Amino acid sequence: MNKVLVAAAAVALMTAQASAKDLKSIGLSLASMDNPYFVAMAKGATASAQKINPNVKINTLDFDYDLNKQATQIDSLIASGVDLILLNPGDPAALEPVIQRAHAAGIPVIAVDTAAKGADITITTDNRQAGEIACQYIVDKLGGKGNVIIQNGPQVSSVRERVEGCKKALANAPEIAVLSSDQNAKGSHRHGMNVMQDHLSQFAKIDAVFTINDRQAIGSDFAAQRLHRNDLIITSVDGAPDIEVALKAKNTCIHASASQDPYAIAQLAVDLGNDLLNGKKPEQDVILIAPKLVTRENVAEYKGWRAER
Image 1 (cartoon, rainbow, N blue to C red):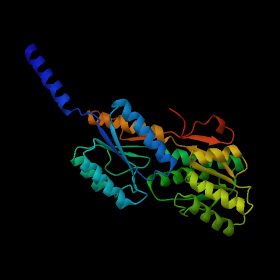
Image 2 (image 1 turned 30 degrees about the vertical axis):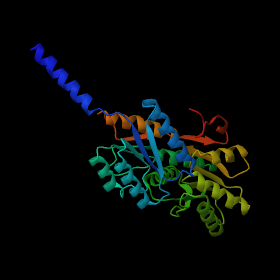
Image 3 (image 1 turned 90 degrees about the horizontal axis):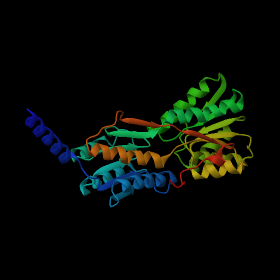
Image 4 (image 1 turned 90 degrees about the vertical axis):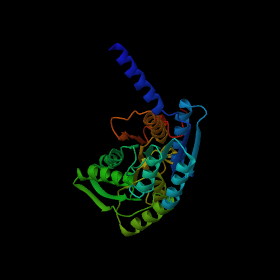
């Protein structure tokens, strides 16, 4: 009987060894390497991967917010035989067919920053909480009374969740009036500025603005300063390098940003992806990273995206 048990254990060990796979190459498909958020994400993935295998090959591609380009890039990564794919999806559902092709090739797919249908694991900031704490700051600063703009953005999961969280915070203050919440400033400085200019022309009294990311906040602040409306309170989400500068300068309308940690998100994605390669699945397939509110008062202690790890 003992011989049978020993033989069975040996077979199980051989099977586990056969199914285990070394992490030799990773493909990253990220929105734009002009954005410091994705630069930090690429660095985090690289740091984690090199701890697992110092000789790992990492192919980082940016799809420039072009969904067709992203699908083509992922097919290329599959064809090249990478062991793991990390992607920041340009659309939450449209990439499902190409993700299925990755699975058919035995390649795990981890979605980072936003969700992707069919991904093995999604790792993202708790975006509802990010929107909620950024807008609760507005409620507190206004004493629960005033006119607020929610400056929307591209309708990926992270943006929708940030707006939902913001609306939740504002809904608890019945004397807060939301003047607008449907204008898409496209996640950019230029469109944030343009949308803010339109709102400042349309509404005589605006007390505060929540933007879905820091780039829109910087653009909105520029528009407000140019029109001498520097009594506004602007909050956002990201904790980007530019927002650190604005918070430290204190001569802007920007008061707070709910920070993300793209470096840590990518590190965790690689670690969990390596576990998947070796047959170990996480207890949850959606993992949320808690944001922290960076304000004028605490920005000096904020480490930021570029901090050494």
